[in-house]
Image 1 (cartoon, rainbow, N blue to C red):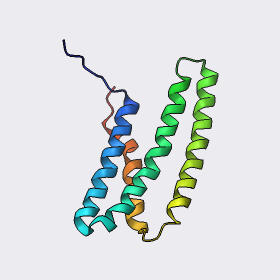
Image 2 (image 1 turned 120 degrees about the vertical axis):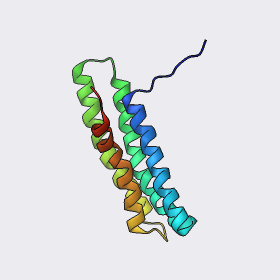
Image 3 (image 1 turned 30 degrees about the vertical axis):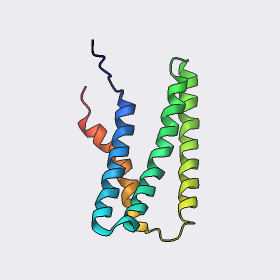
Image 4 (image 1 turned 180 degrees about the vertical axis):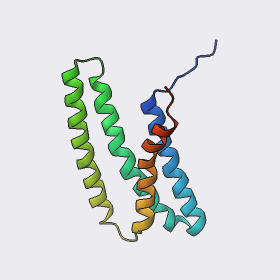
Length: 122
């Protein structure tokens, strides 16, 4: 018997974010080598880690009351903003980081939400 794993919407979005971060980093790698690929990969990490934090925070509250879920969502969003700020602050301390590729990687990860809404089926 073969077990079929069905991914939740959140898991699909997180995997999509990883895919897009790697896709953009690969494009910059092909265009300019490892030095050019580091910045968009770091940008993708800045977009992915806070979203992973929010997903974990909300999944822990799953099955609890509505008040606990809303509280988890709001505290998760605040934590997400804080983590994003700290990660950008840390990355800007590194030498050799190119701003445009960094933002391309970051925006590619964020665009997965928009694509998910566009391709969502009811």
